[in-house]
Structure formats: structure tokens, C-alpha cells
Image (cartoon, rainbow, N blue to C red):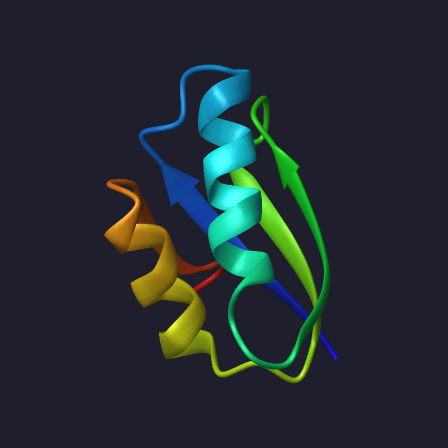
Length: 68
């Protein structure tokens, strides 16, 4: 399963790394690709979307499921 999140507040490579690390720590996440230019994270796996959003917000960034 693939989930796309729109991530706000990222401004540099460190931000991308922080979001990537936070998402990889969520149970069920298999792979993460974060794009600074597109302000999105593409997540592979069966993780709960709300858990992923909460993990990103804990790092200080905004997140929501893309297209909602």
C-alpha cells in the first residue's frame, strides 16, 4: 500500500531527514521517500495514516494525507 502525505514546514535537507526518520519509526512503514521540492512524503507499507501524521507533527512539521 502507498500513502502520500503533504508535508509543510520543510526548508532544507535536515528537514527531509527528520521527516524520513520519523516516518520510518512508525510501525508498518516499509519505505519512505521525501521530496523537499514537492513538499510530500511517499510511504510504502501498511502503517496507519494518523500515526504517520502524528510522527511528522512530533518533529515540528505539518502533515496531511495528500488530496484530502
